[in-house]
Image (cartoon, rainbow, N blue to C red; front, side, top):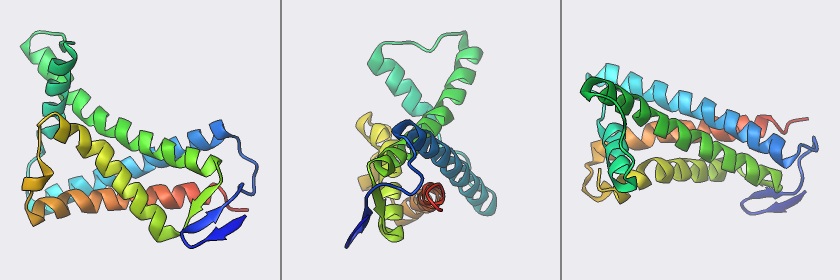
Length: 171
């Protein structure tokens, strides 16, 4: 193991394979996604705010851009869109966790605050990037409250994912 200002680089203590780390990262991403959703729903309950339509709007825009219609009559199609929207968030969360696991398989073990910040930034880009690219939302126009509402759950995701991945490498 080699110490750097940002953390440690080198193989973990358990000799876990790349696939093993990818799966552990995916599990950490799923745990982080669960924590993110819990914080989001708690915020909705405390502040009495409604759900966001951006996940469903993203599905609609992706469907249009890919020229792949969501099948079904009006009600069935809308139900599918409502199911696919949250699934996009889970794919982003599990995907970022998997990338964290793959980084760990290469021997990267960041200092806790660095890993949390990188993971938080990664999941925010994975979740909000497609929405911004498709014109569903524009983060440049968000209020401070909007940013806090988005940042806090993603920060919780980062904390959970970083700590979960680190826990897999303990002796």
